[in-house]
Image (cartoon, rainbow over all chains, first blue to last red; front, side):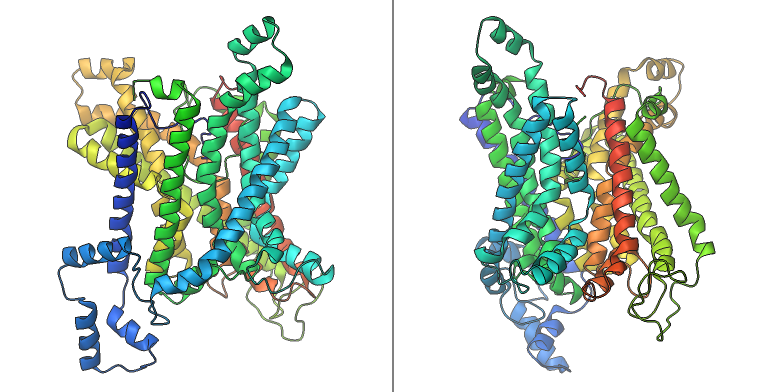
Length: 328
Length: 294
């Protein structure tokens, strides 16, 4: 959401069942579109899946009859539409296919690695929100004065230092030399802090700027001056007017940002040798193991679509203006 | 000032009042933008003419491996004894060139798809807009990973994958400009003068959309540089021995403990490029959105 932090929630009209259903339908269309797109990728990838599966099972020079047998087993000769229907049905029941590299089901490989990735992105999300709140609130408290300037400078630094540069330096200086944490991250809570911080910084920087802008916008609003004129205390104005009005853009950032964190996970997981699905996917890309790549894409897409759906619903619940606008 | 704009590529840019009137002047009035522009010019100049002034970036020297910075090798040497200054300068060409390529391709595709949807309307509009919406509803970086998975790692494949996943926001912007221009005075005058719809679109709608799309694409340049660097770092971009900042960082990470200078060139290059892009896009966003509190 970087380019336009003020995206109003997509939900329009009253928050009735019909509106919620329409938004749900939109999410479904996006997921269906993603499914077609991703299956298309699987289908156009060069190489015979049957041969790849056999090679993964340790048969280096599979004979044509063996390949034909596997093609029969995977039913690769069916029409594309039939294969898509079967694939989509499999995905819905948690069957992401067979890895072309290990020969075992992709879902099985993911289940053992997903908890580590969830720990990493979860911790990064908490850290990023906390950092963004501190920086954004400090900047908005005194626009133009030194806390604002300092927060802006800190955010800029957090933003422009790439996570993979920072990760390499952090790993060597803090972990290897200063002995903080363990060199081989095992994916547990004990080792999550440094990778999560590395992953969180860039997101926190962007979010803090959005929070600052929306806090300032909410503060300069006419209703707030009226509220002040009627003698409402500063704290009451903050709680009743400023925070609820500043919340939707910030929530939107966080919702979509959580998907950005998953997108950034492959890089940070690779730097810190974090045993999650991100690093596993990078290995899979280099080995052209498409079922795994597709599986990761689907997981990230589902998280992203569900998060933006939740954010839109929550925003509409907070801000009545977002439901009552009728034009699209 | 608003968000620095390099977070995700999911944002949908909004049209601003008029792209051609005084954006440059408004931009040059801002000190931050002047710093950013100067930095960008230095980096581009370095990438364009620098390679003529440095030694061969791929010439190994196995008697001088992992040498610390010195007069003959200002940035030191890498594991194969190659001069890191030379590699950093030549790498600038690959890294910045890739980002500019992605920006240009995405802007062109977005412009064509968006103008087509907005100007033709009807079923064409519905189909293109639905496709754009689906793409906008998906996480771009993850999609890029998937497309690289299909095409295989490599410089051109990475550029193609990044372009393929970053045009959707620009297409939506171009479409809204195209739709909004139907009632613009110059377009109405052209239509009344009997000029056909195709010529009106090319002569009046496309120029207006182009300036908007170019500004929006510039706003995303920093995150494009970062994403390209990150994916190259993972080994998905330019392959060795080609020098590129991302793969140089990846080369340097295993020997970082005793040869930390390997990060100087590519690390500094990436940080300075993204800083320049962030400063410019921040000022650009302020300059094109007068209504926003600063």
